[in-house]
Each structure stands twice: as structure tokens, then as C-alpha cells.
Image (cartoon, rainbow, N blue to C red; front, side, top):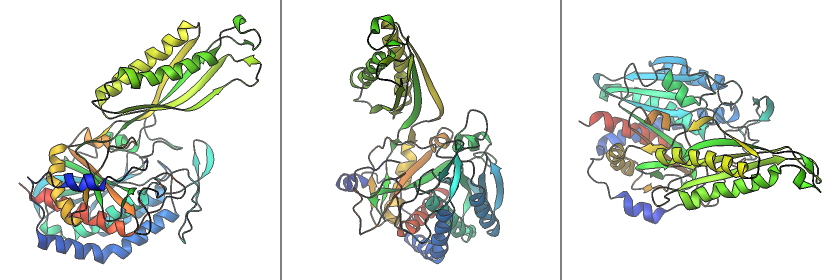
Length: 441
């Protein structure tokens, strides 16, 4: 996740624009608040324990065992090993009805923690064959603790539930680390979908949240339609003919071709895409070629990322990138090989009707602090669930009162931290939107 500006004034102005749906009953909301308060100490304890013992993608064995044991203690039907190390709990209400799924991701990142906490991570792990430091630098420890608490609260309200709730604890949101599940190094959500997590019983709606320092704790940030970008990684290898730097005419210079390709890729965004529809980004993050100042190398390799908010624009962008790179290289006698790598992340697009339906409850839970979020060019594999069923993904503000949300360390930073007061807000929100969805006709 990337840090985002806080557009509070705009958000508060537009948060009241959707009024067609009904908010949750005040008495029920008070009951939810009481029950979340009763489990809050345990929730904070779970978060700290998971934070101190982070596990990389597809290696979340300890975390999965902790989650499964808790869900079983609540009397839920529990499945483990779903899509790798995923855990799924099913809570059946007193009466039949629709099914809603709530999702939390469990994996950590190859980041060395630089936050002075008594429960700071000192863990090490294997990432792509290398030993690395490991940290929950994206808030997944909080997501897991919030959903564990939500499961306990809803299990205690089983007699008031009409329908069923699936609790999805997902591995590998950050992508494969050391041991990838399935072919092509699947991201966790896709692996769970392919394992049938949205079936038996069939899910009617799915909800997820993400802690983010761009908003103050106590705030929920929502957005109908696209909220997070797709994410595609690519490599380009430009091959020429090696020669002496003093006699470039005796070879084919892949360095110059690569420079032209880099500039050409930027003109796709600035001159070929209709940016009045959606934004797009092509960035080069790595460039390697040659080993001496006076030798024109045989080849140059670059790595980059593409971000879009529209599937059709995404497909068009990738096609244009391939044509641009190959044509520019060919013009100088070189050859360009473009490769788009897996895993890929589709745009996270919130169902507009479901967002409108849940917004009044989100506003009520936060005392009116449900604000319109800007689109973020970070990516999330929650999109895989949304491809199958209507879904809502929202941000949960995590910055405490002593910090400025605009300058707080962003997700994926070694200095990332959260205000633990935000955990209770997340549990109240997930519980409330669940009961609201299942209780409405």
C-alpha cells in the first residue's frame, strides 16, 4: 500500500450523498459496541502476538494454526489448508438466509522492523531463496486480529443471525514468497477461489478492509467503483551486438535503444491513453546492462510495473507496450523481448449498489467519519473475490492523534505502525455491515 493524501473535506461532503439505504438499528449497534469492547483486550493481544511472529506468504503456518484453534473454540465449521495455508470458518445463523464472506490477509513482508515496540519483530524467513528479516509492515496482523474478534462477536450473536457468515483468512496477499501454491505462483485470493472458498455455501457478498495511515484512527474511507489499481510487473530484454565503445558503428547499441524504449513507454500514458477516463502509470524500477565504460554490452534488461483502474485500458496498455518496445528496438537493429510476469493483480472495483447499501451503517459505526477515499495506485488481490461476487473493500484509518496522517510512515515501510484503537473500529464495522446485510430484504 502507498500513502495517500487525506481529502477529509471532500469526503465528508460526499459521504452524505448516498441516503437510500437504512442504517443499522441503534440498539443493535449499542450491543455490537458492548460485545466488541468485551473482546478488545484479546484482539489487541492477538495482534501483538502475530506481529511479533510474522510469517511470509504461503508460510503462515503458525498464524493459521492460531486462527483455526480460535474458530474451533467458537463452535464454527473450520477448514484449513485452503489455497495453501488459508483458513475458513463458517458460522450458520439460527435461520437460513444469504451468505456473506469477510476476508483478512495473514502474510507479512521481507522488511526489517525499525519501530521500537516491546512486541517488535525479530523474525527471519526465506524470501525467493534468501534469508531476510520479516515484519508485518502492511497491517495484516491487525486485519487477522480484527476478523478473529469479529468471529467471536458474531458467534455470540448467532441467534440473531439470519443466514451464514464465512470468515476467510487468506495467505499470500503480497504474492508468492518461497513456496507458491498451485501453478504459476498464484496469489492467495486466486488460490482460495480456485479451491472453492466462495462455494458450499455460495457466497452472496464479500467484504474486506485494510489499515492505512493516510487516515486518522476512527475513520473509514470508502469508494464506489475502482478504489485500487491493477498491478502488472514486466521485464524487457533488449539485445544488440557487443562492440568497443570507441567504435559503436561496429555493433548494435542496446543501451541507446533501451533509453528510447523507456521514453517511448511514457508516451503511451501521456499521448495514447484516454486519461480523462481513468489514470494509468508505467514505471521502470530497475535497469541493468554492461560492466565497463568502454564496452557497449550485448544486452540490457529492465524491470517495471503498470498500474491501471480499468480492465480494457489495462489490456490496451500492455499491447501498446509490447508494440512500442519491439518497434523501437527493431528500428536500430536490436531486438526487444517483453515479458509480463505473474502473479498479476486486477483492479479492486467496489460494487456500487453494495457500497451504497453499507455506507449508512459505516457512517453510523464511526459517528459520521466515513469519508470518500481517493483512488490509490497500490494493488490488492481482494479483486479476485470481486470477480465472482459483489464486494466492498474499504480503508480503516490507523494513525493515532499524535501523528499527522499525511506524514505517518506508509504501508510497507520499516517504520509502519498502527494506533491499536483502530482495531475496535474495524471489528464494529465488520460486525455491523454483516448483520445489516443479512437482516435486510
